[in-house]
Length: 121
Length: 493
Image (cartoon, rainbow over all chains, first blue to last red; front, side, top):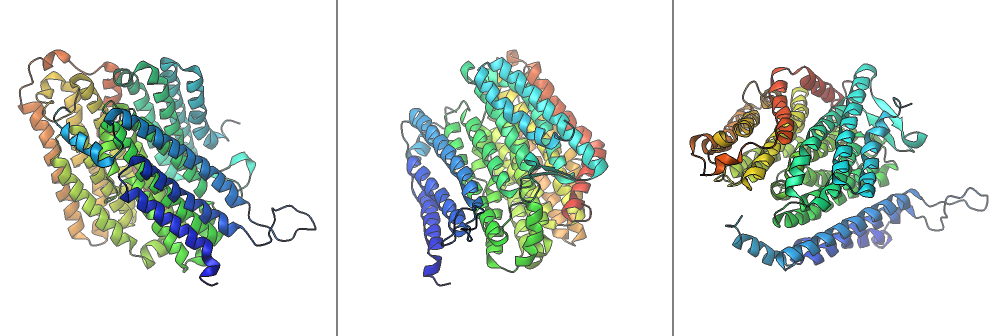
């Protein structure tokens, strides 16, 4: 159990933190969604990687296979991927509507326009 | 046959209604179906609550796969109480939504509104009824995604930004939750909540379990709008269509609180959460901050919907406060406040929907003289406000009573005093409405607008009547909440 032996976790943590950082630090609404996508993707890796055994096969009950990888994480993550796709699609659809309504997808410009329109609320 | 499949039908009925509405594309049909579905779901929830009371917890194996391998739906005294709350609110909001949606949305979006409403209902019911941690995540996302769509349907363009912010923060919350669940799965190899609770004892001391607890707390905290993770809430409530403001204010955050209670008390267990970790202190500190700061911010709002949205953040603080107290009285207070605050806020937002329909706005300046122009609506808001303050004879008083008892049981006299003192801040913001509505002359021409449509006023007043009724007769609510508290503390199964 060395640092290198845990490399899949390092990749997971890097993706997780990078995604979250993009969501927080970027003002562009599409870039934020990309960050969100990366953040969600890191979770796929968190689930999938520990399920795999080196030399493991799918759990087929046969005399020639003895080591099995855990198939359940794959099933879970297939569902999570669907959720991620739906979230991204909905997020982008809302950004399209924001672009139509505000003529911008930069967060600070939109907030500026909202403040300017405070009176005509 | 139907009786034994009730736990599945609770979720499946609204879930199947949604695609039917999309296929038929008729606004009035969709409304009728959504109403019928809500009422059916309410009947099922009542039947389940009755069965649980008679015969103890129900375990339902989805697709006949026995737990812990298959997905288990589990109904006990705690979640049957939450199911009744959600379905009750839905079956009052659905009839209300017809006139409200007709006024606020273009005709071709009506059927989509009710589709999303049914999906949201299915998601919330699924979160509540399921006994599987991953299944819970899927339902969490079903309800959240449909809520983002519903918020984005608001008339004001700010609704879009509110929906976007809610989507980003809600997704981060759900992802944090699923990271926590992933760690639990890695350590125990199971996703069934009851099974998790058993196996966690073996690996209690290991760090991934503590990390999982942290991730789940923060993730659910975002969904609950637990202070300081509440930034999405005021805008989402303020700019969503009126029917949705009242529906999500009454149900969505409450369901997430329920999930937090379930994880703290029934999965991680009190020895870990409150014994080894200082979660009680953290929860109480955050709740006190939520109650005080959000109430103060509410006082300075110029828009009634935003004012009551901030008040929601404060009221959620009372619920998590009861969770942090972690004794029988405190938990009874927390669970009964789930219900009481649900119907109180539902009532207020439904009445505000009528205000925004007639006046075109809910800003405080525009409601001058509302007591004369819309007497029933403004009197209802005042009664709801009294329940928020916790005046004896209203539902809000009952929950605060138990919270104070819970605080005193710990010897936290300062906390009991603070609960009472913070109610006075609620008095200030409710008074701001009373002053505008009853002591100012209405704007010229406002009198001609008249009351909100009957189809909106009657459901709203059913909720208002609930605020008073459950303040006088606590047989159902306190009894149910007390049983739920006993389940949480492991005194009964």
